[in-house]
Amino acid sequence: MLIGVSGLGSIGLQHITAFGQVPGVRLVAFDPDPGRRAAAAANPAVERTTGDLGELLEAGLDAFVVAGPDHVHPAQIRAAAERGLPLLVEKPVAASLAQARAAAAGVAATGTPALVGYVLRHRLAVQRTRQVLADGEIGEPVAVHVMLGAYGTIEAAVSRFGTKEPDRLYRDYSHEWDYLRWYFGPIARAFAAARTVTSVPHVESPNCVDGLLEFASGLRATFHLDYLEPLGTRTVQVLGTGGTLLADFGRGTVDVRSRAHGRDRTVRHELPEPAAAALARQAAHLVAVARGEAEPLVTLDDGVAALAAAEAVRAAAEAAAWRDLPPLH
Image (cartoon, rainbow, N blue to C red; front, side):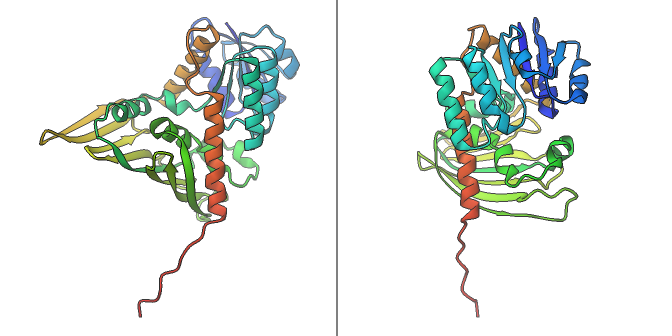
């Protein structure tokens, strides 16, 4: 199977490595930058590289990966769909919600299978958390809290953060909105407040966001996202009518405490794995979809919905209204 990868920045090269672990896959890679093409060519799975996108699209591909900057996604999605190429597009689907919706509608009209790169859904701990919730092990969820600290992302992708771009945090970590929708259903409303902390070497604006989501079911989730904490915290805690769940996606652990028939039960699911393992599963999933052996786990509609949630959180943060407390004396 011949797969084309467009965009050879940090995430594009990670895709190259991931597909190199899938048996029977050969790669053609595109990027206008010669240095990035040289970096990709060092991987033995890459047959050739090109600085011409048209050459890539006409290379006899079986599937296509869109991993370039957000603003190029819609045109490349459209080009792949017009050729009937099953595709994987990195998140966010587009630079704006309107563009993402138009791209999804265009792909739907062609019937081309399309996936979005919300790779967290391929992590074992994320999948086990969903199963625990679906099985009702903690009863009905009544409260959710998400914590994300991600300064390490800036340190790992220095070139991408070399350009100024406001509000990057909301879109970069739309992963959170995607898995929350996967767990709890559609998100109906959002409230948020943001600030910019300047005591770190690289300052994104904003780099700290806190807020509240309300799902169509009425369930609510509080969240914290930042580009400040250096250790890579990524957790979700769920309180239910029958117990609690605490998942640490970085460490790969899911702790479940429950009570049934008057007895308490505590279970720890230990599912540690390198981050690259989920990317390799995602790569294998695209191959299976392209062969007609599987349906997309994360659809373009899912990608549009996650971007809609990100935009709602951003807009809520801009319009946040606070009520001052009266003086105590």
